[in-house]
Each structure stands twice: as C-alpha cells, then as structure tokens.
Amino acid sequence: MDIISKAADDIPLSSNRYLTRGTDSTIVGNSEIINAYTKLPDFIFWSCITPLTTADWKKTTIKKEGEIGPPQEVNDKKFGGFLWARIEKTEELFSKLSKKQQKLIDETVIAIDPDLKKKSAESWIEDMKRMKE
Picture 1 (cartoon, rainbow, N blue to C red):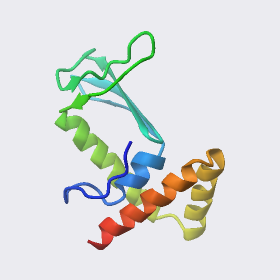
Picture 2: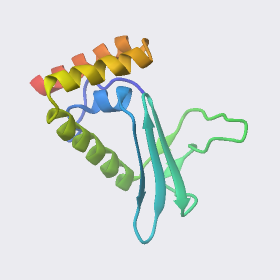
Picture 3: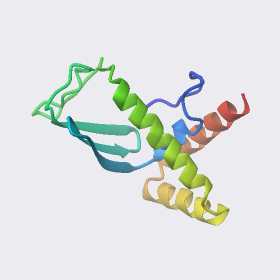
Picture 4: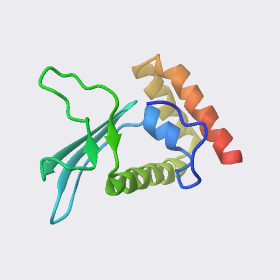
C-alpha cells in the first residue's frame, strides 16, 4: 500500500500507521453476510464466505496460481466504513497505552522486519503532517 499524504477529511488521521504497519484480524458478519478480514503490513485480505462473491469487488480474486494484478476496484461502502472504524478503534486503543508501551510496540514491529523501519518513519511523518493540517 502507498502512504497517504493527502486525503479527504473523513479519513482517520492515523491511517498510515494502521495500513502500512498494523496487523489485525477478525470475522465480520450479520444475518446476511460473513467475511473474514486480515490486515498485515501493506496487505488486506477480505474473504467473502457468505455470499461467496460481491459485485462491489472487481478483479480482486486471487487465482489458483496465486496471482493477482492491477487494476483492482473496490466500491464496497460497507467495507470502507468497516475499515475506517477499525483504524479509529486502533487509534483510540493505542492512545491509551503508556509512552513506554507504545515505544515497545514500535521497536518490536521494526525488529520483526527491519525494512519496516523506513516505511514506519514515512508513515509516522505523513500522519503527523495530516494531524497538523
């Protein structure tokens, strides 16, 4: 995923941190749909369980050979609302941690994948710029 430097006002301020560094996973559903959601640094997996497909997702199916390519299109407003809510909840929970805990999380994420250090810094800088606007 690319780092967001300019965005609409309704996009949560810590979007870069979540999208480029965060991990998250859950089952999403109600009486009509069931989806599996997994967020890894730079990747989002959204698996339709019931129904198996949706018209709002185009060219997003991973083929048996494991390939997927651009251009992909997602026009699913429910997914967008879900994603923003997850970013906002993560932002809320992270802000409740002590500075020491926040630092430990940052150090652990970078220790797992040293290449994330550069992208982590870029994400943080862009989020800070957006918060000052």
